[in-house]
Length: 332
Image (cartoon, rainbow, N blue to C red):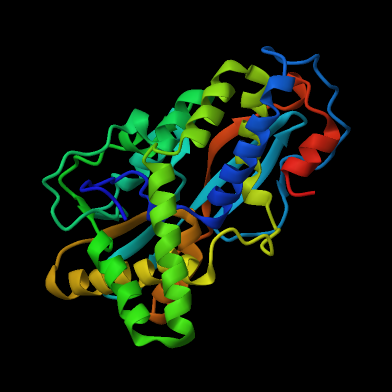
């Protein structure tokens, strides 16, 4: 599925349903890109709105979109601290893989409060191979096109308290191959998921020319850049879950199977290592609702509300994007 590499910042397996929806939208938008002017259109007056700031769309637990000003929208990710008597605090720290630089500075400051940080990053069992250059990956190209940064190097993973805690490529492939060997409907679902993983890996490692060309066009059009920033900011408001872009088995592999692994490793850590006061689990924000359920099953309770950090801002009306287009980007 993947070349011999260890992508600690944004592996293909960390792609969320919403990320894949966005990739499809980016490609569609790029097909129309030649119709955009190289500069933004005339500004549009924002429609009147009251009660700001307001959350857009439905509650997704640890991902949301807010409107803080008439022409300011942002995607936010959440973090939440959990406590259990006689045990270290557990801090669930949600993230997205491409964002503004100061977003990662704020997350880094929160992570510094933990004695141990268990972070996501699917890698090969052999970690000796060199990493893929960030700027050649799909996330790297996207970040460059939109004036954003990728999670790594946005986050400093060299800290001694950071520990990669995720399934390896071989372990994930092994789960699917075992189901394929078992036959039946499970085998059909696992085979589909295996093929999807390979396809995602090709795209995310920068080897899909259509995606690369689309992002190249984005770089040339400030208007298109703002459209895509708005689409990214609107991920947290997207309630259209019926528009599935990956199979149920792949969705389960990406989130539930990996969550099960990180919680099992957390339980081992709590048994074997004493003296820690706080442990962070640093994963994509879509993992957090399921991780929260697993922590509660272990007897943990929230120590307070979700803390929100804005990751990507968009100012669509200043770029000449109409109110109807804004509504569409935010899920109708």
